[in-house]
Image (tube, rainbow over all chains, first blue to last red; front, side):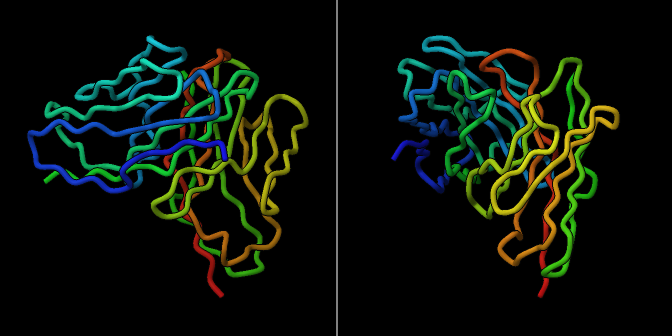
Length: 113
Length: 115
């Protein structure tokens, strides 16, 4: 089945540690996105990538980094510079001709203590 | 700049009652509009989308939405609520008429359904 996988589902880290969240898609989509979700805040865009080896900052990129070395993969690193990293992180992708419709992964809940 | 406003962070209805979730948008370009549903601790699932074809859009699970340009609205309705409709709903608009650009989401409306 085609889709987006995010791993792990739950992640726990100590403050001051960097952590990388995985996002893999087998939909052959060109564009991929990372969103952060906090209660009552909706989804806020962190980074997005329209093609391999290229990515752009979203609205809340500070304290995060990404890479796009393969079309299928778009990992997100939450660095120690991110002041409030505890959140639900969602990865999404869009294919050519899909008219901006985004397909979402199941999400990773990150807790930093 | 584009934006999305969802009126009412929480809506409660009885099973069998009409569901109405409100969404207003602002956009400097002809928008594409979406409604997504999210169940607890899961990703978002597309309910329906408006992409400049018919203004009344039918989606999954009996939901529909009407694009009203004059009111800049895209409200989501369902004639008869079911217990399984209890979830969080998000309205979203395209940022610009450009492929690969991200969506702007509203803050969400939590729908509760009582028996």
